[in-house]
Length: 253
Image: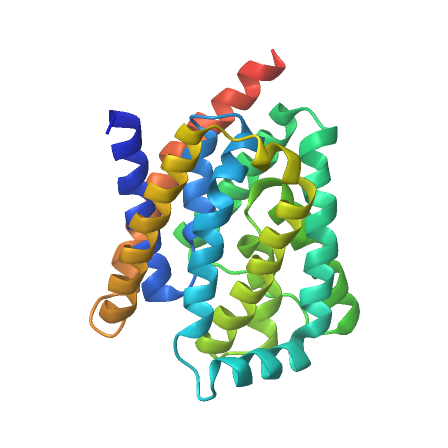
């Protein structure tokens, strides 16, 4: 195993551990890490399968109902948000094919700066819980998620106004994230099929590391502070975000 694979495995392990503890956070960290090493479209392709596995595992864990009962309940209550995020994701993935990747990297860097800044300042923007806001938020979150895998930063602004239940936020969030991955597979199917065996080996490694780490995170959820892990993730994101921003500006100059 080379140094790059070890570094990525460590980042995926930390991000997946946080995801297991809090139900959120893995895609933004891992996408930023991969985007600092690979072209953005390729980075997003590499993360689709590990991310889908984590979304499913977070979805299946916890809740007062069965897995199927959870699916029906949350789909019934949040179907419009899920649909809008899916539509937005399809448009967002198209941006990867239509727009210079440097501009998408700038968007990713901006989202990271917003995410880190809001957490450091201890401020969260909460959007009104209305249908028009839901529709706009779903589409915008989907576009950003499809293009950069950073859907959570926008989606949470609405979910925090819709409910105070952390389990609901995690379940609905991961439902929308999963649909975003489905959109990416639909649009990027041809390059996915063309991946070399070395990339599939990396995908398998990162998926295994992520699954083991999220299982540990779920078990440690009741014992460990989320704040500590969030601080670590913010540091990692800041470093990686600066690197992504440098890549973007270098590509435009």
